[in-house]
Image 1 (spheres, rainbow over the protein chains, first blue to last red):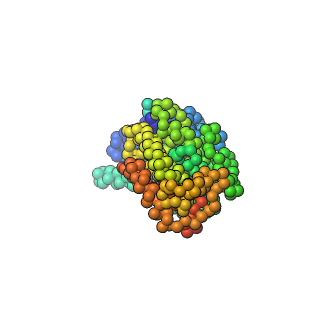
Image 2 (cartoon, rainbow over the protein chains, first blue to last red):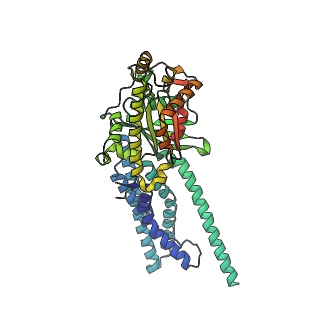
Image 3 (cartoon, rainbow over the protein chains, first blue to last red):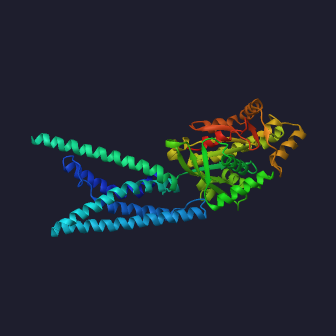
Length: 148
Length: 313
């Protein structure tokens, strides 16, 4: 059975955030190469982040860690819990962003726009921390993707 | 007018992008240094492949002992997990009592995990180093049996994906009478070659990666060189070598002469030249080292610091 760590990163992290990156790129190009708070979507990022957190926790849970011991098992379970919790928070944030966006778009509630922005900022900032944590999980637990 | 506003818009958005990127990199670096390195250190697996009674466990224990005693500069280590803490300390105590460590059995196949910190201040890095202490019989099985029969074993899967490889050569067996020594050289060379070829075969599609991993050809029990610099026919010396190399009591610590070690090492390297040339070929980070858990030069255990620095990233 062949394994690879780079493909683990591609499958578990890059693919889930691909939608977010593509959406941002398309908006960047269509807005004549200008960046703004609207270039990247907080709701898409919340969903992408939630997805890769689920992928990472599942990978940790199912990985056959060779020469494992009780302490390492406990550490793995702790990180599975951390990533599952982050995923739940991300999905909740996704719901809140979409809900506040709907309130603003269809009912013209101005405060909803501000709430949406706040949630988006939370998602963007959390991404800076969650992404390196997810990649470090791979190198710390030596997670690999089965290639054949 | 509109054109110049558009240009300002474009420039300011680029500027915002660059500032955001720098800010993100800064936060990421701080987060990595102060949080990730401590909570999730990078795993670094070291496979020690050698045969029965070659001194692998004794060597691992001596490495820990030296690090804990702060005798190896720039390296700090903390054992992780109850298993590692109790076994490492029990083994250190056994050596301090003057007794040899018992051979690692299949049932006792174990790994030691330690968090090793290398460097200082900004260059400080922590690694979760896992050293697998495989029983000699398993190592032999690794070399002897058909790859298909052991491809799914825990040992094979672990060793094949290791980040550094140490192939152990037992000088106590090499310094036997010339006939037995020649046989040992031939058999061991064959077995190590097979093991390495299995590893290369497994990584065939990513050979570049494996060729950049540290590979150490490690001659253990180099303190025996003070008894003989090459295979000997003198029975008394052979008995003494066997007693010190495989006895129930560990040999006394001895001050080694660099000239003697260099001279004897030349002989050993010459006898293992085919194997050494084969393993060193194309391998970017390969090294031949002579170590001893009981012999020292300039108050330092022979080449232990160099060994540790060679196998760490």
